[in-house]
Length: 445
Image 1 (cartoon, rainbow, N blue to C red):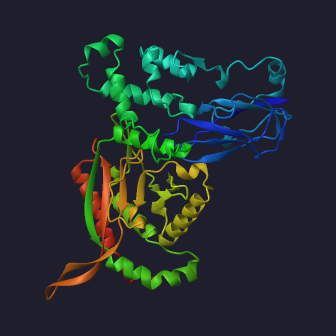
Image 2 (image 1 turned 90 degrees about the horizontal axis):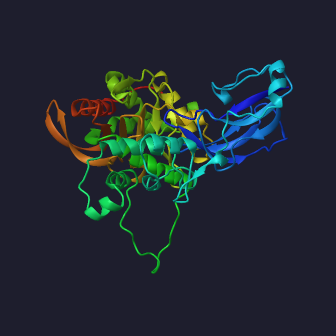
Image 3 (image 1 turned 60 degrees about the vertical axis):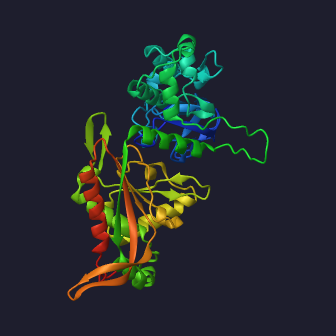
């Protein structure tokens, strides 16, 4: 017999924890290799976690609805073989035991893993993990101050990420003079300031009477909300705009979309054409394809384009086209259609929504002419494409200027002003527009 530790897998670059939605197996159940053991959820996607080995589930270390850090042991599977091959499903920390060693450990309880049930309790009747309480003690945060931190975990629990963001904002927040009464009762001005930044709220409204409906946010909407607030708090956003004449591109698509479908079996939308133009511009301006780690700039050599997709529920998800610079227009079209289709069916895999380096969102789908998108952290820029409309425009010809009806659209780029200045951001956006305007209307499919 050998024991294998099932590890909470890493689900994305910025994801530090996941929520256990459902255990598909219970202790004592037999498990086949690659059979689903549990379902988890992050702020990006829900996912099923398969077993890396065949055996028997002997212990579950975290209950349903628990929020578990990446890399934690969540269950123990007992196998009959003496050795177990490493599997990506259990990450780097999977412990593989040999048969002689197991005989000693089977009788002894595993003491290295702390179940989530051992949450501590404070005076505000909210549960805190040992990690959160340890961070609070180390940073000198009182129980009263801890109770005012907005939690994004299950049932409003404060997570490690919440603590990190709170401490960052507390360190950067200006110290405002406090009324004498508030200073005596609790020195909480930095906390109040942070609460306004990390989870802004409107003044309390009286909705106990009148013709209203109170709608509780679902889990995904809460996480999107927190992620958007975090992005605005992290990055000083600047948005630049250009207007592009995309007449050649529109006419080419109209002429060839039927042929494209017949030849490749795919409907070609404008999205792969936009992504193609973005990829070319990133090659010319690689310092857009970066992320920040404190004062360190991390330049990404892979060009992975995220495409924001609206779900039937009204929520948003961003599947990622990996190595988009390696794909031609046909390949981009196939990837766009495949990812968008499976996003609407909630069938994306965890690896398909992580490691993006730049994001494109098409607000023109909803008839909007332009938008000011929020950066998808930890990226530093995001492009919004507006609707394409016919407009009179001045055209320069060899016979002089003329006014003609052209297909025009606005492009808007939001970028992180900590590292992307107006020169870089504006030049990059202009290059995308130039790529669209110079689209070869005579290219074959």
